[in-house]
Length: 427
View 1: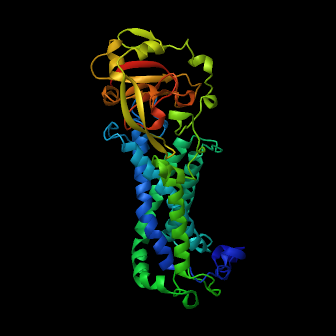
View 2 (view 1 turned 30 degrees about the horizontal axis):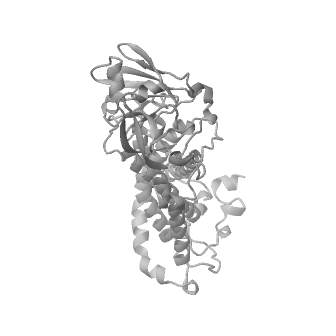
View 3 (view 1 turned 90 degrees about the vertical axis):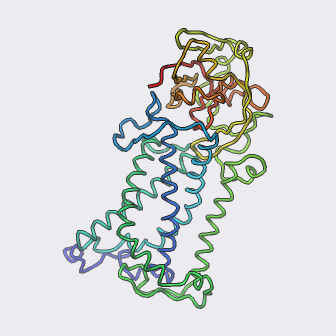
C-alpha cells in the first residue's frame, strides 16, 4: 500500500500505461479536438449566459436562481429588436452544443489515460492541473447531459435544471480557464508538430504512433492500427455533421423542419393553422376545458381593475404580426399572431407612464405560471395578447383563450392561458 501511495507501484488495469494501446492517441490528435472545443465551447457558454439575461431576472418572479449571488449578474434589459434575437442566440446555444457532442466524446477518449495517471499528482502545480482536469471533464459532462435532458423535458435529477445548469456552467468555465492557461502552449506546440493536411492523406497501413510524450497520451505498447487518424477525424466530423443535419431544422420553418428528426416532443403538434411546436400541453399543466370556456374572464389591474370576456377582447382593435416564438430547448417557429396590443390594454385600465406587466396564467403551479415583462416589452406595438394564430382561434395547447406574444422574448415568457395582466410602474 505504501508503495502505491508513493507511486513506486501502480494499481492494476487502467492505471498502468500498457492498458491503453491505441496507436492513434497522442498530443497532436488531442490538440485537434481541443482546438475545435476551444472555439465552440465559449460560444455555447456565452449564448447560455445570454439566455439567462433574456429572462430579465431583475423583474419580479423572473429570477429562477435567486440564491446564486454574484453568479447571477444582470447588465441590461432584454431587447425587443430584432424580433429574432432569442431565436438566433438560443438556437446557436442548443444546436452548436449538440453538434459538439461527438467532438467532446472524442476528446475524452483521447485523454482518458490521463484520468487514470498514477500517482495522481507529484507536485502542487500538478495537483492544480489534475483538479482543473477533473472539474473540466465533470463540468462538461454535467452541462451536456443536463442540457440534453432538458431538451427532452426529462427531469430525473433532484434539483432545478436552471440553477444546476447555471452553477455547472460557472464551474466549467472556471476549470476551462485554468486548463487553457496551463495547456495552451502545449496545444500550439502539438498542432505544429504534424501537418493536418498530411494526416488526412495518411492511409491505414501508413499510420504510426506519435512520438512518446511526457503526458503519457501515446501508448507505451501500441497495438496495430485498425483505423487511421484520417478515418477517426472523418468519423467524428461526420457524427457532428449528422447531429447538425438532424437537429438544425427545428430552428427553421417549412421543408427544413421535416429533417429535424432529433427535434424534441414529436413532430405533430395540432390541427390546421395550429400545427406547430407545442412545449407543454394544457393537460400536462392541469388546464381543463371548463376553465377556458365561456366563463373565462381576463382580469386587468392598473389604476382600476376590469374583467373582460373573450368576445369583448375580440371587439377591440386587433393587430396581426408575424413573430417568432423560440424556446429554451432550441426549437423555434414563426407564425402570424392576431390580438390586442398590451399597450392598449394598459391604457384601458388606466395604467400610464413607464410601466411593465406581471402576467398570471391558469396553469397550476410551476415556475412559468407567471412572468414579468419589462416596460419596453409592454410598450412595443407588436407585443400582443394573442387570440388567434394564422387566422384561426388558438388551440387549447397553444394557449386558448389568450396568450402573450412578445418579440424577442423566450418562449416561456410568452405565457399561455392568461388569466390576469397586472400593470405596474417599471422599477
